[in-house]
Length: 361
Image 1 (cartoon, one colour):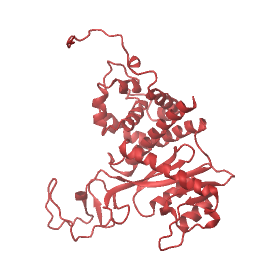
Image 2 (spheres, helix red, strand yellow):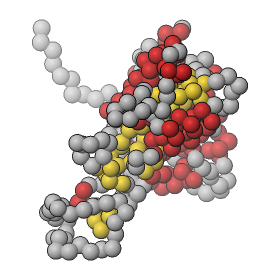
Image 3 (cartoon, helix red, strand yellow):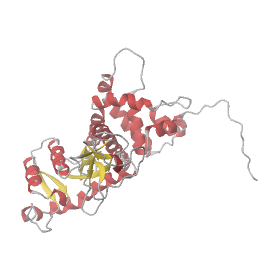
């Protein structure tokens, strides 16, 4: 028998958002971890707001919204607020009822500077890493480092001379431009859309793009991100930032290892890593040169294990680019994009923690 569509809407309902989410849905485990993290940040969040005045949208809700945007590949804050009007899972995650209204997208803009000023993204990411450490999911001895390019929210047409010498180039919105035969460098040109973005290419034979550079340190036991950073893109940023992040690791008496690709096989990085208390297990670069590490390092079985494990650092990079929205950054400036990068790294860890909880249950 063919069914018919009943266009009559129910006048009353006893359902809540809690009833609509499956008991075994992995988002439940993720929200439980996020709630634990935010409970530990209550003091920092409370210090951000004065005691008097009109109540704002809770900062916990904005942080949860940022995590959801990374988890579900929401392209913008405006698109998220529109989806929040009808997506019951989003409402449940934020603690809203079925009949509660979604907040306006301008709420993110008005509160972003306050969140940046108090380093909330850094604290949130560090708290997520701490939850993984307390569950004994993180190694304290073996790490891997890597960097990747993140395309900035700026086009080649916005990369113009700093002195304003536009020449005969046409003006106006989306005007045609011919850059053939002209030299464009970061020291003489800058983007009018995002002045902090730099023109850079990853390797010879690839196109140069306006971008930033993301860096992560992963531990080798379960591939969790234990540190993340976003900087301007240049040829030294990967190695310099890697050393800075390694120095931020808690000191230990026992010697630790750090794996890396051939880009880290330089005398400077190897010496700095050893000075920081890490044995560099980087891939040897012997193309027309001598490697900075020799048989004293490569003969050990631990070197082979590090080289096998370090390839897992590409997994969070791939997730951040394809799912977390990192392939094309949505903000302007280093500070804002760095905060979004840290939230995406925290979201990746939340997924890994939820999966590891299921495996160890």
